[in-house]
Amino acid sequence: MKRGRRAAVVVPATLPVALAALCAALLALPGEALAFSDFVGSRGLAMGQAGRGDARGDQGPLWNPAGMSLARLYTVEGGYGFITRDGGHAARVSVVDSTSASKLAGGLFYGYRTASPAGVAQLSGHEAGLSLSYPFAEQVLLGVTAKYVNLSGGFEPDMKGDHSGFTADAGLVVRAGSMVTIGVAGYNLRDLRTVLSPLSLGYGVALQPTPDLTLVADGYHDFTTSDPLRGTTITVSGGAEYVLQRRMVFRLGGGRDGGSEHGFLTAGVAALSELGSLDFGIRQDVSGQAKLTFIAAGVRLFVPQP
Image 1: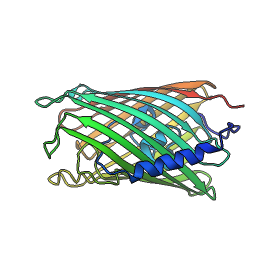
Image 2: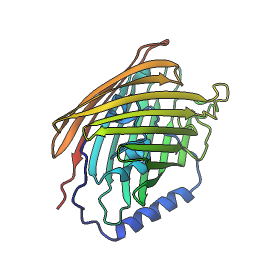
Image 3: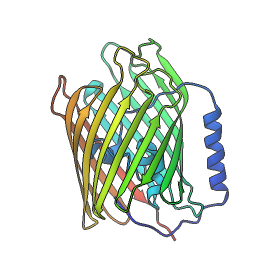
């Protein structure tokens, strides 16, 4: 991961106003929504599906929108994920800019999800949204994501074949010292009672003892209100990231998935340059029935700044 402060990009004065207006409009619209919660990006996957306390770049809209304000970055990212269960595929593109002189960070993203579950119609979904974050006194960062999702097929307890509409996430990051950040995020705050977009809560802590080493630990509560027979599930996980000479990045992690009740291990590697990075991550279940494999790859471009 590229770290540190960068020279500011010249941003039109109307951009923060436009982003804020779009966010308010999205939040005001009624509807229901779904999110692709099993796609966490190549970095997040490789670090044990943890990182809500250090959610920089595209990890902000994915994990904790407040994390976009942790560093001055302007990135364009694309990612792909594959899940052995039901031949699941996911793709995502995003643009995240936290270099504005106003300190308001913004991110736009689009995701596509498909799978072929046995015995039901093929799952196909689209997700698009806007994330905003702002730092208060440099110690407290707040963020929000507004998103629209259209999904068809798959299986839901309500037996409906199509779901679409708007929902929102909200996040908080607190700098608890020079090396520690704590993150909390709520997801799908408009509870739409669907297993693919559950009302949920995530939280985590990140420790950076040196500029090249990051340690993370997270918890995640899936309230799954659309399927009360399951009740609340809790996932715990952790991971580490080490940057070697600003050229290679190595990641490891693991945890227990509360939804599948599987223990898992993760790993990943990235090639880093001044222009961008190429990332790869893998998760392998090591306990439980019907063990799954998750694979993710991504490319990140650091937009040049004057």
